[in-house]
Amino acid sequence: MSRVPVGPVSGRGDEGHATVAVVPPGRGSRRSRALAAVLAVSARILADVVPLGPVPLGGLRLGLSGAGRLDLARGTRVARDRTGPVPGRWVVPPGTGDSPHVLYYLHGGGFVMGSSASHIGVAARIARAAGVPAFLPDYRRAPEAPFPAAPDDVRAGFDHLRIRGYAARDIVIAGDSAGGHLAYGLVVELDREGADLPAGVALVSPWLDLWLRTGWEREAARRDPFLSVKFADRARRAHVPDGDPADPRLDLLAATPGPHWPPFFVQGGETEAITGDTQALEEALAAAGVPHELQIWPGQVHVWHAFHPLVPEAAAAARHLGHFVRDALARGADPS
Image (cartoon, rainbow, N blue to C red; front, side):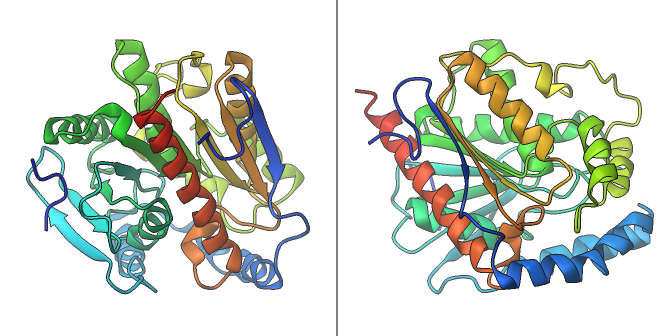
């Protein structure tokens, strides 16, 4: 069956042990600090006031999609796929077309922006370091398709990969920002149903608390130079206009991980208002004995991976993620 059309986990000790690291030590590179300063007086100010009407939202979506292919490595193939219940794109780095594994990457964008096109470059760099292809589903976005459209599509895309012939142990689920919420939510849902879990889970700047309870507190203490908590709150209301905060598909931090869960790898930027989400997740994984690593990168903004090649930390972080994906898949293939 054609799947692609056209040692231990990194940083993990013995069972249940975890690593919480500041990577790399220091304040971040000069270029990353300059980027944060520029974003603070440009994108951040705009995000605080921009409405989520059709015209501004359409412009934001178009701009993000156009940036997705910047600095794509030579030989990387990108193929549109409409064969399943959820369309998307395959990103196939050189030499990975025959891999029996796949990275299931869920793009961010606050549930209202982003697409498989906008995150081609981010997914490609991780997939290349892992030596696997990636599939990015175009899950439906708010406000046109509010909750539960996005998590429903993410589950349908995962199930279709299984139908194509991938075993759960052949898949690593990854996502950034809102995509991190969808990735973690998918694992929670699979576990609740007793379904097979993926080989690993990689989260980048995950937005787990949609009601931003710690986000507002951190923003009051130290202004996030890039992520607008006001914009995130507007996006949440578009995604969940009438949702119950206690809904188990929304209140992910109330989920109880199990010791049988796959390894997790989480990266967050030190400047982010939502780093409280990553810390709460780390505490829950540690309490459950789930193998995991949390990296906090000094001086980095929300999903700094998207700013390659402007900041050197973007490529470095992608390599860390790729190594985790490779090791998690190897462990899934040979649990012994």
